[in-house]
Image (cartoon, rainbow, N blue to C red):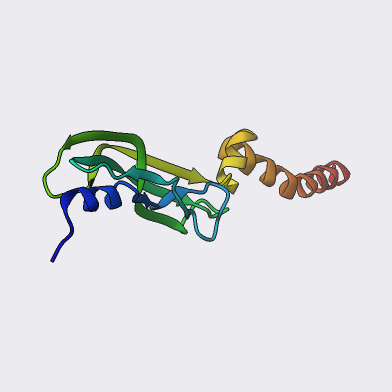
Length: 157
């Protein structure tokens, strides 16, 4: 046998519901596991008899692409994760046998995260490109040999 509605409503009005979600994020400084997680702030719901506390939490899709090789090839990492969007909509509606209604909705926006390290090819491009680096290396290697050939041809005459 149940108590009267007034006794049940008095008891229910003393209840609170805290919802904590595990959220994910892209950690640009972590090379071992670039996707981290943390506990979100509490979503606090105060129970009010006769009303449903409805919340719409948006989950945002995130894509990660990292290239962490010094050579600039290989070691490409692709992954996808979802994070709780900052946008939360709270709506109070009339009582319909629910105290709390939490809905997770996929956010239409998508976030892309890209990270790449400064590779050897980037260094070559910064100091004058591949041809400049190639001609400098050839000049160093052949420079002393060409000088000896010049001295030899002068002495031969």
